[in-house]
Image (cartoon, rainbow, N blue to C red; front, side):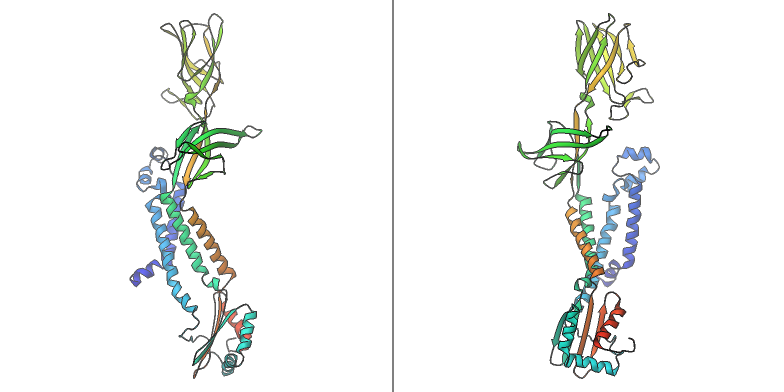
Length: 445
């Protein structure tokens, strides 16, 4: 790769620019509701809906607009790390042919003589001193050179690279999850089974229960489900909020519940003009006979009755806030009653038409089958995110609590001795510490 492109991809300026862009996009994704239908944006954000849909801002975190700078930031971390590795691996060599000048020319003659004695006469004492300080010590000797090497906190030398590697793996996991993750919503009634798309098993709801607090609010939802393969039960588990079922790389979460109002069973009380009272139970859309020649039918049931601007009835919510049933009574070939009857407002007859005085219909009770709403999700990058988080934590701990320190002392025949002192943190304080250990009194001490 050309050196210019390498420097660009490894530059700090690029990293800062990408971070700013990612933060701005994340803010936009927070302000704009995600994963809604196009009609939602046209209704609530009419002036911006076209731009939102064109730029895929309705699912920003899975769009090329967001994933591209994230991928480029991952490349920046990779190239930045690769740029640092050669120098750090050279430092790990037991011998470095390049004798550094830093510190060597500043030594006084007395200090140079002292360094020679450490290497020639007192090297065993030198090794003992640094071992007591928990350094890893090595002596390297050749025909014309002796080198003393002491190191401590080796993990801290690569702490920043571990942090970079952790971030790279986290970003890679996030990209994989953003591109390949699945979200499937499943609504099941008791006894119903449904095949999971792309899998060779089905999920059956065996029972669903709702637990309540004393004040009547919902405490918990519990779905007892069975995993079926080839008609055989492979696994049975109760799914609760925060207690998912894990099977075949899918997690099944309890999301909500509802009632199938289209299959509601209604109990109606009919007061006939003669004073007789009849009670009948029938399903939505069912017709039954009250007596010879008289039939009653429920045309519709709405759990939360409301009229729109055109006078059409609709349900404001899926909860039984204002339940109402549309009922028709026919005698022979004549319609004698048609209208909405209300559970909570039995006296409300504004939406009724009757041809017989004294005929009255009341909605006494209603029930509807309950269904459980589950969400099946796969997150293929989750394990990578966990691994990356662990490496990130190790890198931070190594960088802050195991700072790398190194002392190199060498002498080549015919040349003055040299001393190299290096520390990733507080380098000047460490140099003074080493000079004090070696008994040196440099001008800069």
